Image (cartoon, rainbow, N blue to C red):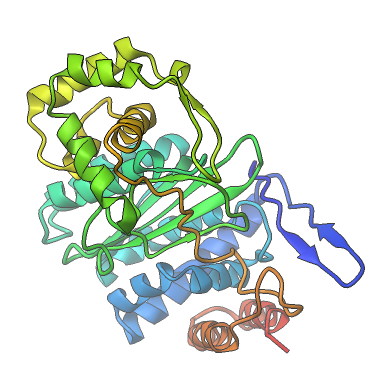
Length: 369
């Protein structure tokens, strides 16, 4: 895998930056990961139900522990993409019987997600209408690339759903300048509004400065942006042209040459003609990307005084925590619950004795002492 996340362990005498594993998982290892992922998934879905398995996958702590069981260290590069890939391959045959389906993947495979959802609906493997599911898949990606401008470009998107149309999204972005990766967890049980605090969690070992149009405190700016998209483009571009340079506390300068007025006029003409009603609909307009949202956010704040949030929504590190208290103290209850749940699932699988022992040994190696 090409990810170069850079987790850091602080000791009493200094700081150690742990080098991450590079390269791809060898075929023999990935095959075993696929087999183990399938067996654990089957046991949990059978004993606890599909919804419970999906809830666990949407939990960043449990997902990370699951990756450790499959053979990763907590800081290993490629955990997200490989775990999701193993799960998709492992549940390819068992999924229809259990009632759980994994769509999407890394790179170009992620763009096939709508087609995969449509195929499930056409084959009547899901009872729900495909269109709302496709919308949920696309909107979750659009939000994390456009409404939440944190410098991480999405390259991986998995959409997991059940027969009734409940869904979760696990997607990951990469900041090419810093080498950090960031994972986004979504759950249909959690999402009340796609553009207002929609995430189950956002995971990264680094917190930075972002333009966060999904923050609750950005509500007025979202409304103003939607209103501006319905204003004659010439007027909006004229107002934007009044902005030469601005500085926001705790944030870098944003200059006028970042966004060309001619391009802004073209996009706003499209939004003006479509008569959108709110910020979510604005995001859904083809062509509306980060630069358009940034321009509208700038006008909203600097000309109309509507506050824009720069709060980073990261809530969890990739790890459960460190025994020395860094990056934060271990949550023993959550940690032990994750391990106990997985130990029970592994013990009940149909894996051979040697595979079970190896998986349980990996769990024990990550046990908090």
